[in-house]
Amino acid sequence: MNSKKVLMLLIAGISQLPVQAAADSEKEIDALNQLCRNTVASGDYSEAAAVCRRARFDASKLAPGSEVHIASLVNEAELKVKLGNHVDAVDIYGRALRMLEQQPGGGTSAEAAVLLERRAESQMARGKNYEAELILRRALQIREKLSGPLAVETAITRARHADTLTILQQQFDALDEYRLALKAFEAAGGPTRDRYLATRLSIAELMSRQSRREEAEVEYGRLLEDAQKPPQQRQYVIAAYDRLAWLQGLKGDLTGARELYRRELAEIGASGLRKDLIPQIDDRLKRLTGVEAAP
Image (cartoon, rainbow, N blue to C red):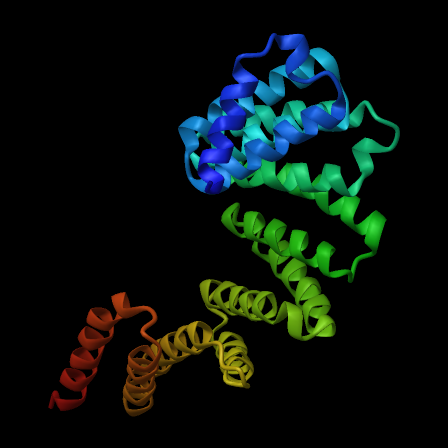
């Protein structure tokens, strides 16, 4: 019998029991929570909604305010995110957080930081960037207190907080945050390489938007050098070539710009990544050739 049939039989059996018998202990509610997560993972969101709702209902009646009750809320919020319903997700994450805060030390725990981060992501998905920045600021304070300013988990939150600062045009504060996050990722090495490169790219983009072109060129150059180290991270190689070529064109180095765009096309061809950029690059190459050919 496959896992899908097992899940459906379990759900059918649970649905036929009275509420009090459906989950008479936190252990059984925990099993319902696991069933909820498994059903979400299966992609059957309609069935998952029923299972997750049942888990949350039983938890609210039989173990209100408990860890399994909080977990049932988090599961339901995650399902809302999968469905693109970020309004409800923000509300449910908030309820789970308030419940966690009722526990000793819960409001300043790593679990609270996770809930804050997830709530912020849903706020950003709604375009509520000011609210997201405030939420991430609190999450960052918790991370710093628990793990220190240069811990990887702190750096991950810091870089995301910097993203919100960038959106809100607080660019100098954002740059400071990105640089501190970069320092942590660089110290951590291999496991955080992708985050390191993403943060390096964010710093370069921020400098470019501030018209600090020489500094941006240095940062893109560092990004290219780091991304080309084995194993290559070609998505960042492509991004670096693209921005460096653009900056060379602005400087009037048309030959240099053309060469970088050609290298970018070669990387796209070799990796199969960012094929959407090909028409744009072709157009830029034509313009560069036209400018150079003009009398």
